Image (cartoon, rainbow, N blue to C red):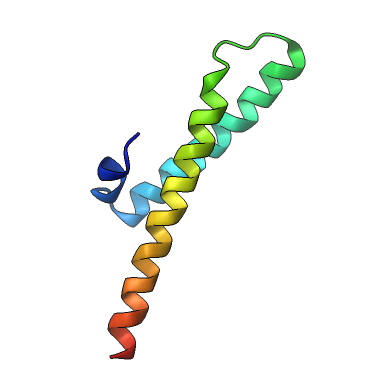
Length: 70
């Protein structure tokens, strides 16, 4: 998922997506332990999506904080 697509989403949608990506990582780890891994890149993509989502949420918090302080 691209950062542009993530920025267009609301905070609630981002929190839901963040939860889904964390679940994806847990499921990947379970598949890894059982030896039935479908897609090896899925965990990497999920981690990167989590980082993008957290970055955008943090940017929004910083913008809101700057708006309140002025």
